[in-house]
Image (cartoon, rainbow, N blue to C red; front, side):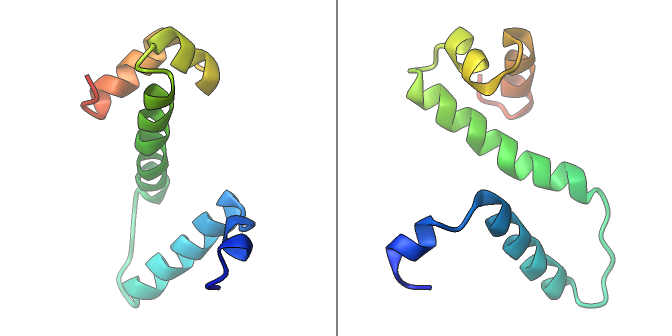
Length: 83
């Protein structure tokens, strides 16, 4: 799809599914493990970074937007070396 309008209508869920299909096709005969953690990390870090930028790094506001506790946000920020 080269049309930007049709590309913007693809859901995040569809993009994840497409990426997973590519990932498994590239594996060929190799096995994989910890797929859940890998996917979560790939999505969680940019999500937190994006929200922090939008709130000018206001952790309380970012935590509210994300629907998580501020302390949980801080733990995740430490995990991903964002602070």
